[in-house]
Length: 320
Image (cartoon, one colour):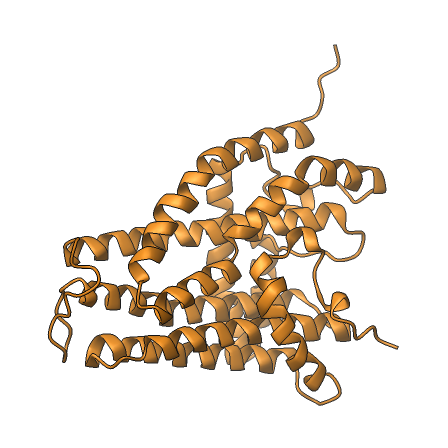
């Protein structure tokens, strides 16, 4: 009989984001328990997450384009999308149906939701700083202490660095699970995705399959390029990493657990929650500044520490 407890539906706590465990996953647990005895599939919940996220983006865009006060609704829907996003994985783990294809669809839908919401939030910040919108006069209220055009630039930088943040967390999480878990393996190499594409391209593909490959493979390629620069001591491919052993897992966990806990604050759940709260209080400017200053500032210490830990674990000792 399946273990239906909340703890059984979590990933190892070392890699879980605090806000996910405190908010998103408890709410998702209720959805998962309801869906478990039904024919509802994890992929269907993933699609629902996408549609709710797109609705959040539409609400945010309406605030910018029409001057309608819907940022609170947008932030609430954005969090609800994250709850459904947690529920699909929990349901898959509960049923024992987790797969690479499911994870790729989940990542692709995350990208669609971010594309729907984040530009709208930045456009709203620009309007609030005095920039014009299609139908509403410039607000010039909360953010007037900085020129509107500068908020566009800072917002774009926040998007780029925020994407890098989630890539870093996602990959270090997968490496941690790969080396510390005897069964649960996450993470894919671009070559594996390309091979799967060649297999599936020979027959008609559903929309979900198309999203998996068109978004997942470029994402993995960008991820590898980023890690070639950020952490060159880390093996480029999962297949090149050491095989799981209890001793190796213990050594890796002892050396990397603290770093992994720090990386969890760079995950997509933390991003969604903080941006959603900023939208609800109409202070997207504070989110942009926090992402650029606080999160990037912390990386100045976190990245060198991670590079040293990776070098110590993955670089073979040279015999005297």
